[in-house]
Figure 1 (cartoon, rainbow, N blue to C red):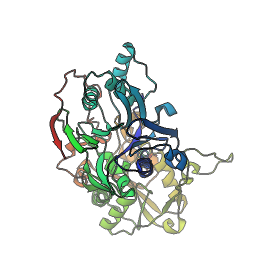
Figure 2: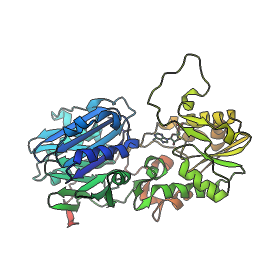
Figure 3: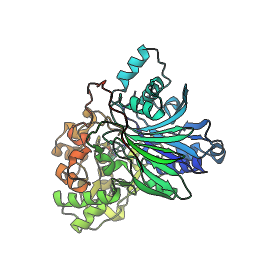
Length: 470
Ligand code: AMP
């Protein structure tokens, strides 16, 4: 069961072109997962679905979308780095059980799925996939509660970890965010009628939707023919939204917790320029992830912003290298330095994060080969020292360069002239909220939002505390 899935989810209820809107929504969320995509729709009686390996643009045609009828649909994009990159693990996951059909799309990772899976298997359950999402589906099917809402709550009370989930039933759509709200999820309306939920608000922009708000941590939003209801069925937990969404993962044109991701990244650049100034001639971003922070760094420092690196946006997951080796090939196919911009210059290179350090090292060598006189690397987040278990793809500690090397050692490895990171206090100053305690920042601190070996509590919490119609 891989705990490295990066995903995006989408759902639409009450719009005549539901599958088409889901398709567009997934287009906008493609950055959250490029390995497989799928859409499930319903006409009110049955659920139809289509999912394949590959990217949204290559999977769906007009014909395929025409075969996904109805005015409700959900969609999913997924990227997994583990061995589980197979069609059987693509989502939405669609099943029929005794009380009807259900489709589910999940973003996030559970930390006790293996444990529950083993227990269910001992009792005779047969799993079709290696997805932790399937565990939730089994628990829903096994629940003896009456309504689907109660069954979902009972199932989710057993799992721990990160989940932003969208369920589709023939008569309703249900969106749920885990009690700590680790992964994002927003809800909105669509012009012409209907509701929409999505991992990020940029998906709403594309379909002329209006962002209402974030689905709150621990909230269950039920959308059916009577409208939208909000339930708070889980025990209260402190919110621990993933801070890395603001740093790297989300699209900068998305709004999270009412705050523009772009504005947060730019602020990080401002702060970085104060915390780790550099005497230089130009500031260049590593595109695309470093652009907003580089603009902020340039504004704060007064050092001109330039595009010294250009990204090729059409590179696939793999490419065939020529037999005769080309220097810096792996990075050159994605990025190229503009000699006219960097030659003879003292350059500040801004990126959002360093993971293994391998890309950074190649980039520095490439900029140096293009004639830069000095290269000062500035990173708009604190050093990444711990892996993520809640849905961001980071390698184990031993492969995280900042987990095993000092600042000086990383600088030496990168072959840069200086290196500076944003501090934790700096990060706090840039993200919304009173304190970093409201976030999961385990990748920088090791303080995991959901303890990995947390003992399961069998205690069933009272269902549906405070159901309010909104
Ligand atoms: P590395 O060579 O491993 O240090 O890679 C660093 C680059 O990866 C930076 O440019 C980051 O923007 C990018 N990055 C950080 N986190 C992720 C992630 N989870 N998936 C893909 N790329 C990432």
